[in-house]
Image (tube, rainbow, N blue to C red):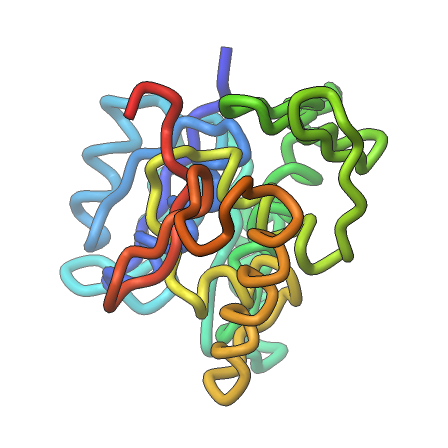
Length: 230
């Protein structure tokens, strides 16, 4: 059964980006946009790990963590723009397990979540080793890609883009999201390099790169992997 993660943050783009990456990695995600809602969701959803923004309306992350700690030893990961030592000490005294300063990469959040869950629950949390859409197969463990059984050689960037797309067919990724996925950090000035990587990827996996069967352009937004059933 997938582990359930509660993300509490008043910034919608953080809920969306972090939630998307965790969902893609196989986690079940529930969200809250303020402290009171976070406490309500925690008590009703009983998540396996809680990600808390420190500065939230109605009730800050410190208070939410303090109340959660009265009821549970669930792992707590703080997201915060406050990096002063006194704030970190305060969080640790309340019962925080990890700190992640803003700004951060969503991929780093996923890595911290997986490490925390391994530490607390003592189990190896693994992603699927194989993804398949139509004739395209991607093996995470061997880093091999094949089309209708024929091996295709991809660069690391091309592999990373294909992995992101094939893991969630139909999900539209912006260029910035894909850049973040393959580099760990997104730089707006370089997001158009994704177009070059996608062009090269299509040349390798599409029968007709100008009329792609797999990697579709969603104009004005980004790219997606076309689901099997469409």
